[in-house]
Length: 291
Image (tube, rainbow, N blue to C red; front, side):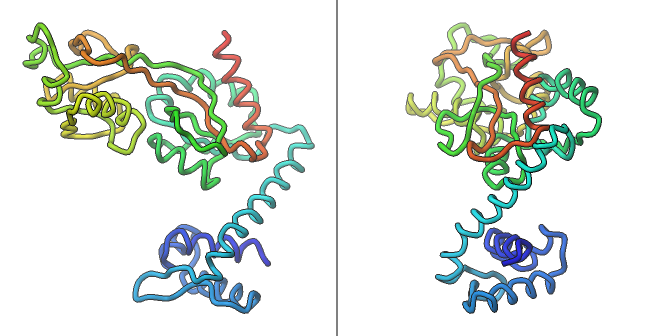
């Protein structure tokens, strides 16, 4: 079986659409259809049930799905291990991270990486925490630097690097700033400006309220902490931001719940063979923490 046929099969299975899979693979829809037809001929079994606008896996397709992933993973790992034998730090390192980490944690490390390893290319994707985990699982990126999830899958390796103590803030003219004894119920009754609901940071904050039988009013969710701080500073709501971001633009409130900390760190597949560029970046990250 040709690896390109299996890649097309996985793309169609994931997108449940030939047209969307074609966009993902940067191919024409007819090219993807021909690849699937050829694979079905080789296996002498239909892999998809065709519907009006979508497709679904047949029983044969369901049986092939995990094996196709294993075959492609084995091919990729074998290529990587052979490339690593040269010892050269080269090629493309795909990395997922958040805008906050990219702006506030990574610049010195990336500057050193670019300086030391000019033959290596960085492909950085800025995504939220859930997106970063998804890209790692799908092998679309080699490393992720993101908020760590206490309940991460066992097939992922998560290494803590930094800790963010989160502070509750509002604008200086916001009604909350004049309250002497702030309660969680006061915050629950007031619009919050927090990351989107599928992020680890939101779930951490939401858990505090749910444990007290309260729910959040996340009026204008955004994953950009700098944008959250700006909206808070002009009085649009309250939020929790890293202590390192708190300055005279915002009013710091006494957080009435249990302290909220988020751990930021490195994520990669436990069984994936990392390239020399990935290993070099990990070493630089570890060196920066020790220093």
